[in-house]
Length: 303
Image 1: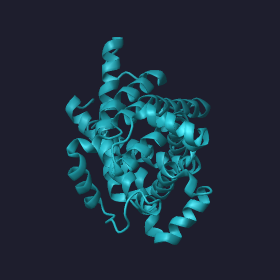
Image 2 (image 1 turned 180 degrees about the vertical axis):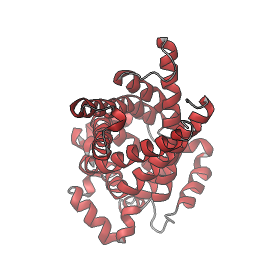
Image 3 (image 1 turned 90 degrees about the horizontal axis):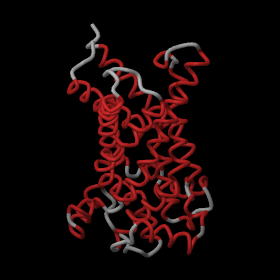
């Protein structure tokens, strides 16, 4: 028995929130290193140097800087993303003239995820701005861009944004976020579904029955596809969101060209190593939590 569309949307929302929580808890230290290396690429010699420097500066808690807004960001993003993903799949079925509940192709699911990312960007941008500023606050002080002694808490960052830019200040970097998400989530869901299909074909099973490890690998593969495609865009977004703390920043294209002229192509890929290391456990955990929690909730309506 297929649940009512509203109930199904609530299930997708809840399962997405579970996935977002699992993603943050398994990958936050790598995300912290990524943001620091993206924003100040000349300050660290590499991924390990960044990790060691963070540990020496503020201890283990430094690797989890920004965890609270990261949790809020990922729960909000993935809840909206997966709810919209389910809705967009139904829209694709309607446009294609196929029955509700009919399995879509991998490409159709990738397109659904790409469109769904537009909605999730609206939920993600404000919380990710706060997260990125928290993660790069030490480097902002060390580089002399802001005075030392700033409070480094979620609420101090929120108050600063509201005081200097008002509520719309939380959407600095929104255009870049949307530009990143649309192609990124096409690759994310496309890679995930393609990998699941290949496992199902090799194992002679249905996609829902491939097991935990293939499911987690498929999630990690989808995440790797996303980051390899959109990483330079994400680097520009981090710069805009962090450096807007000291004044209004240029838009996406001017910031992108400025990085290319002054720092070269390599700067756009600074922090890629911790990102790729993070993507398999974090996105594997995301999809595992999403699929298992969704399956459990959907089973309540199959009795």
